[in-house]
Every structure is written in structure tokens, then in C-alpha cells.
Image (cartoon, rainbow, N blue to C red):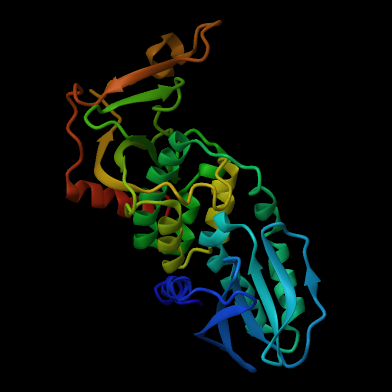
Length: 330
């Protein structure tokens, strides 16, 4: 696996060095194949490359993906497979993609080009959605808040606990394990803690279960610690395959690389149990728990500064996260 700290530092060093006008500037990584070290490289156009040393020249010329190419390459008379990133907005995803291809190459050192092409095939659907994608900041902050909580759960329960995140499935609640669920809301407002609820089921607990509302406040800050690449990287370090996370983001309208420029600082997180005393409109507010005919598209706001329910303290919050991280149904 590529070193998550060393790799970005190498790109910075290459940028500071500057690429030659008609060539390519390289740095040897710690990752090696039988024929030698894998090289990180930057060309005169600023494109990023990984050069995988080969035992013989490759004729592969895979241009099927707009963002990432696989090409045979010669450097100082030695043959390489060139994994090249052609779309700058994919730079944040490129290292994760290359990591998958390098892992495939390591498994089949006698057939590196073919193994890398097969691994790239699994990324093609994601790469196709990049070129013409635009994403709204409001959509990104909501997903970032969910990812922040998912990171906390995975850190307690292991990489398989990524399955508690229901983001790609558009279920009623954002996070669920057994009969324990979380609904996550995010705000960029400086002071207000008003949130909008969509529908009469969003704050309806699972049957015989519990529901908690998580309120996250983020502030847009250049260089902030919260961003899509940083959270994907944290999950990767916890053992979650980046492609799993990126596919969920793509299903939410956030194609790879399209939100990487949006950075935030975390200002606060408050968690409330949605139970007796918490102001919520659900189907239980109606006779026989049936929504009257003709009532549709219910939306309302909750001002958390005015609710009488106290938010969870740190100990209760940790217990809740441990419950959601449990491998037994809650």
C-alpha cells in the first residue's frame, strides 16, 4: 500500500522541483516490484504519473478512460507501465486508484500491464462521471457530516462497519445498525442551530429501536481538516477500500474529485435522543398512526436552541458509537 504520508510529500517535492520542458521528473517511492522501485513522476504539463518497472516493453495503450491512461513507456532505455492522470481534479483520487493497480501488479508480476488494466476496469464507471459533474456545496457538507460519524464508528468496529452507512441506499436514516439509527444534519450557519426535517418518517425511530439526531456545524476554511479526500484517506487507513466510499459518494452526486476543493473546520457536534420530549412530527402524531389522505411533502424546522431535551454528554456519545460499531445487532 502506498504510504499515505510519503506520497503527498513526493508530489509537493516534484512540483517545487518543476518538470523538465520536454521530459518528466521522477522520485522513487518505497514501493518496489521485481524490476525495481515504482516511480512517482510529474511531466511538463503538470500531469501526475506512476511508473511501474517492467521486465520487457509493453504495447498496452489503454485510453478508454478520460481521466486515467495506461501506456507503455521508456525511461532511460528501461521499460515501464505509465499510469497517468489526465484530469487535475482527479489528483486526490489518483493515489487510491494507483494503489489498487499496484496491488494488482504485485499479485501478477509476470503480467503487470494486464493485471493493471483489469484493476482499472473496476474504476471506469466512477471515472466516466467526472468530466461534466458539478456539485453544490450544500450537498457536500451534509455528506461530510455523515462521513465524520462513519469514521468514528469504523474506528471502533473495524472496516466492515462501513456497512452501517446507508448513504448509497437512500434509506430513511443515514446510519443504522440493527435497531439503532442516526439521522445526521449539518449546518454552516455561524450561530443558528436550526435544522430542516423532510417528511414524517425521518425522525421516526426504528421499530422497537432507538433514533438519535446528530447536529454537526462546519465552517468553510481553506486548508480545513474536513474534506472529502481527508475523510476518504482516514477510512482507507482504517482498512476501508477507497472505491467503496467513492462509489457511495458518486451515488449521492459527488463524483470523484469534484468536491476536493471544498474544505471545512469542525466547530461542534451535538447528539440528541429522539424520544419523549424531543419535538418531532411523525406518523404517530396522527390517529391510528395513519397520514391523512392528501397530506404530502411535509417539511418543518427544529430550533435546537429551544428544545428542552439535553444533548448527550461525551460518555453517552461514546457508548452510542460503540453500540453502532458492534458486530451484533443492536
